Length: 119
Image (cartoon, rainbow, N blue to C red; front, side, top):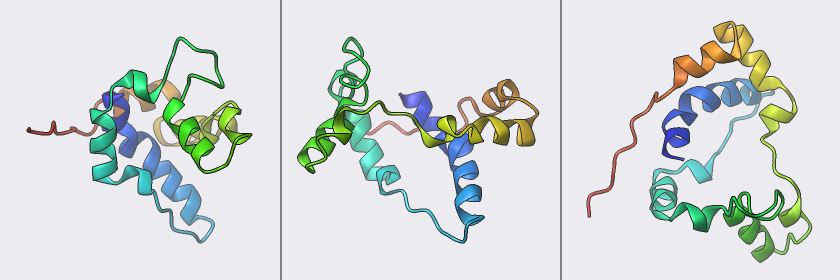
């Protein structure tokens, strides 16, 4: 999970920002606030996801719990898939900017250092 956080800015945010701004909008990502990320990194992984449970139940557990609390019962049990993968925009963006998915992954691995919190 720490690796995903370290490279989200380079792997995802540039592409997402370009796509959104091409449509005259500006993205807001409150879930990427530094204090939110810091808090999530302190939560044990098994409280965020239960990978031994079936897809639609254990994956993204914390998001499913929030959806239930917000009254979104049906949405809480739907399979989760990032929009960039379902639409294939990630693959096309990687091909355009890096030549291939593999080159994009190699170029962005470990791109941002996450600072550990001192207690």
